[in-house]
Amino acid sequence: KELERIKIADLKGYAKDNAIAAKGMRYFLELWRKHKGKSLRHWAVTEIGGNNHENIHIHAIVWTKEREELERIWKWGIVWSGNKKNEKVVNYVNARTANYIVKYMSKKDEKHPNYIGIVMTSAGIGRNYKEKRETYKTSTGHTVNLNTYWRSLI
Image 1 (cartoon, helix red, strand yellow):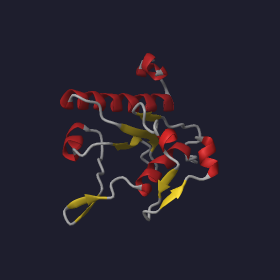
Image 2 (cartoon, one colour):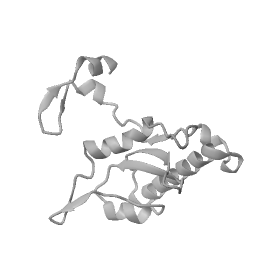
Image 3 (cartoon, one colour):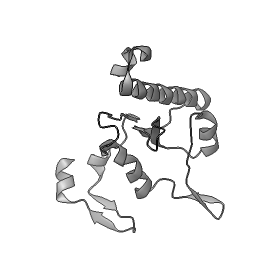
Image 4 (cartoon, one colour):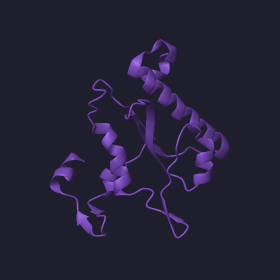
């Protein structure tokens, strides 16, 4: 919200990078609402790239089954929608892909130690977790109790 009141041209460095990414995400969500008439649930985090290109980019999970529409509206990079198996997309959001994105929230970037990424998320994601969850399913399909540590945090 703070970045919305400041003009991007007045910003410098990583603050400017994050403001540009946030504006791009906001623009994309506005286009989606214009075409679909409803908002797109999302969770995203910014990162400064490595391997000598050092461009800001966004890692995100969006909740939609309309992959083709997503690729058409998002114009600023790659849309990965999962692996194909027998002509069907599988494993597009699972523990591995979620962990891949979550790591950017806590990752210490040795090359850019002063960079702090921003998280852009739909309101209410995870809101009901604390009221409804005393158990969870493991990746093997087993239902287990939430441990005492996590239960006390929630």
